[in-house]
Image (cartoon, rainbow over all chains, first blue to last red; front, side, top):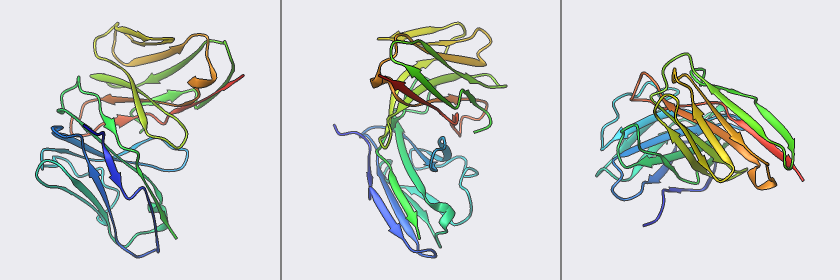
Length: 115
Length: 111
């Protein structure tokens, strides 16, 4: 079916507001990843889900960031009390499993701008 | 991430020239992935290497993983404007609960 989808594609918010970013992985993919890409930078790993479980949350930049995944499918990344330094493109990816030999398929990203 | 060093950071070549991008880690690369990102677009998977000494090619792009599995190179032969973009290496390292990307190499190909 379709590839990885993310919504919204663009989000402009005011400093201090909460935002919620959504990721719909490819159907049947058990592994889901969130990354952040700041302007002109590489990808910063945030968190990975195997099914609904995130084994390691230490990649989240601060306690204002949280993520969940339900039903082994859709995932949401929530940023509370947004700051200007949160402005970036947030990318989601999924893979069939977490084995080494599985490429990640990336969504188009959500561009977040915090004013 | 600092676990993966990519070089060069940027590259401008004349169309038709060959070029090489490197990705290096101080730790064992259990799986090394090359992706391309066109400006303003998502990441496209190019190739994945797993075994020491492995080499894969697709069209004019060849990727290699060294025997020690700590360095990979991406070589483009007879570059074209369509090769322009950001090339990123990604890898499974010691912590399988994370995934690591290099900082990327920005390639411009002048017609």
